[in-house]
Amino acid sequence: MATDTTDRIGLDTLVPALGSHRNRKRIGRGPGSGTGKTSGKGHKGIKARAGHHGPGGGKPHFEGGQMPLTRRVPKRGFTNPFREESQVVRLDALDRMPANSEVTLATLAEAGLVRAGKGAPKLLANGQLTRAVTVRGIKVSAGAREKILAAGGQIED
Image (cartoon, rainbow, N blue to C red):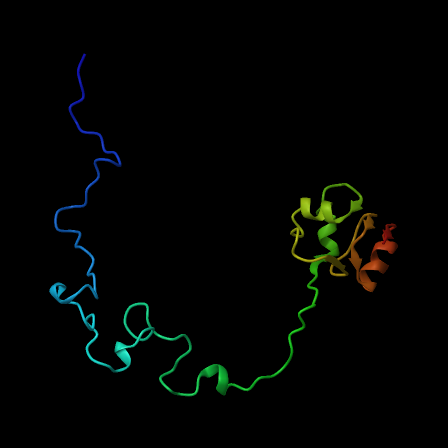
């Protein structure tokens, strides 16, 4: 029986390649470290201050004293926080649904026409309806209502 002489790689045997890793520069650790006192930032000036310039520095939206974009662009309009977005469903999409003649939120989601939790669905009168369907608990536009009833279907609120 032959034994395997190759070493297996494991988390306990992993080491970085020689020379590929250098120790982190520990600034502000006394005069003997070479980066004590001012921590390599020199004396005074904006680059010596906390939260400015260098890696991880900079103030968001600060444009060097220039009037920031968000303040110099005129403000207009209003965003209604209570706006309700509807998921639009075309009438001809109902023809492509399985032969079940009932249209509910669950059957629309199952057919992939709407996504759950993304707003209430609403049927619009785009396209033609060739078979009778029963619509339950879904908003319907006036044009879609006419086409559904003309095709022999019914709408239950």
